[in-house]
Structure formats: C-alpha cells, structure tokens
Length: 70
Image (cartoon, rainbow, N blue to C red; front, side):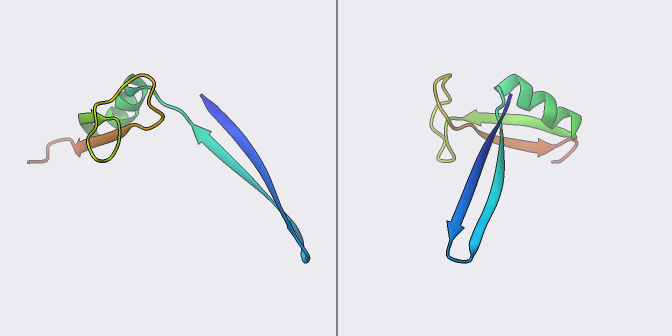
C-alpha cells in the first residue's frame, strides 16, 4: 500500500510543493522484495533497538544478508 502526503511550504519568497510517497510493507511483502534483490531475511524487529515486532507497531526494522555471504 502507498499513500501520498502533499505539503506546501509558503514564505515571503513564494511557495514550494512537496510530494512525499510512503510505502507500507508487511513482513511477508518485505521478505519477498528482499529475496528478489538477493537478500536473506535474518531478523524482523519492532524498532532498530531490537524490540519485538508486533502487528500494531508503526515501525519495522529488518536485518538482511546478501545471499552466499559468510
């Protein structure tokens, strides 16, 4: 799933528009993307500090290794 945030920043010099695309992955979707790119998924965590992943978390951290790496 993807969403689009459209942001306009206005100041005395004019306005600038920014489009921020956000893509959301399930662990299964991300594992498939990583495998297609040549990686093995080693760990899914709820944050970069290693918390347990949960279905209600807004963050997913992944440790992956390139295929055939020692």
